[in-house]
Amino acid sequence: MSDHQMDFEIVCPNDHDQTVTFSRDEFEEVLKSGALVFHCNTCDTNWAPTHEDIAKIRTQFAKESS
Ligand SMILES: [Zn+2]
Image (tube, rainbow, N blue to C red; front, side, top):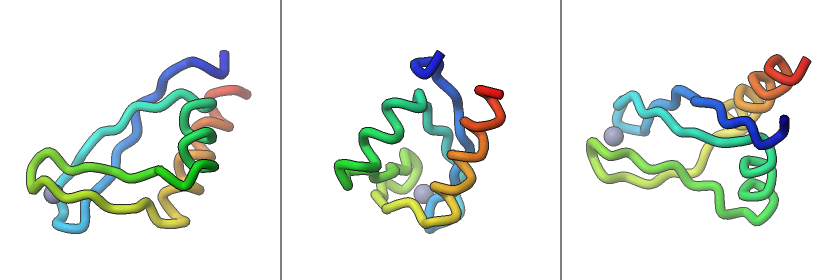
């Protein structure tokens, strides 16, 4: 079930709500490669997730798989 996709609410540096979709494997793979960058469709900004963002996403995956 590690390829099950989940939606995550993120907020861009300019306070726009965005939703990103990852499976657990996808997320860990992108994170490991150092290429994890979020994109805001509203203000066209790219930004790297904070440690809190990453922790929050991992917590949601853990909840989902338990
Ligand atoms: Zn934005």
